Length: 83
Image 1 (cartoon, rainbow, N blue to C red):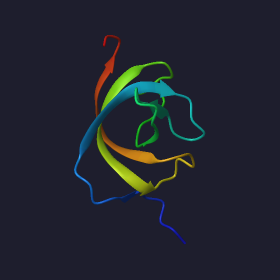
Image 2 (cartoon, rainbow, N blue to C red):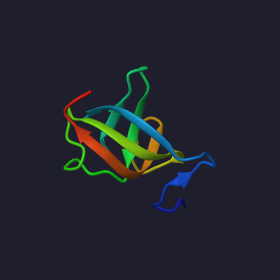
Image 3 (cartoon, rainbow, N blue to C red):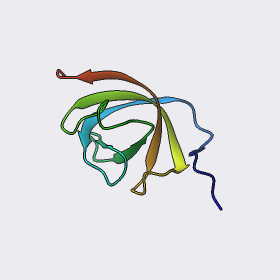
Image 4 (cartoon, one colour):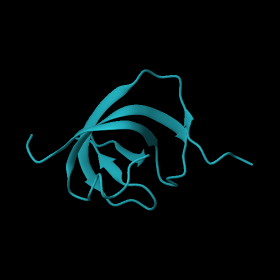
């Protein structure tokens, strides 16, 4: 049985930015290059649908998000309304 925690890949911390979309369990972040990540560790109040956000964290192999590649968020730098 898998533990209910994210398994972090051995990658350095990354910063990614995009627009929040609705997801099955976790919010999704749609990047300008077309990639989409499920945001593990972020609730919908901190990343509302339609918001432009920048997050810092790491890609993860497994998560509870149940949708696509996931990104374990350490912190949100900006919920921002400007580009």
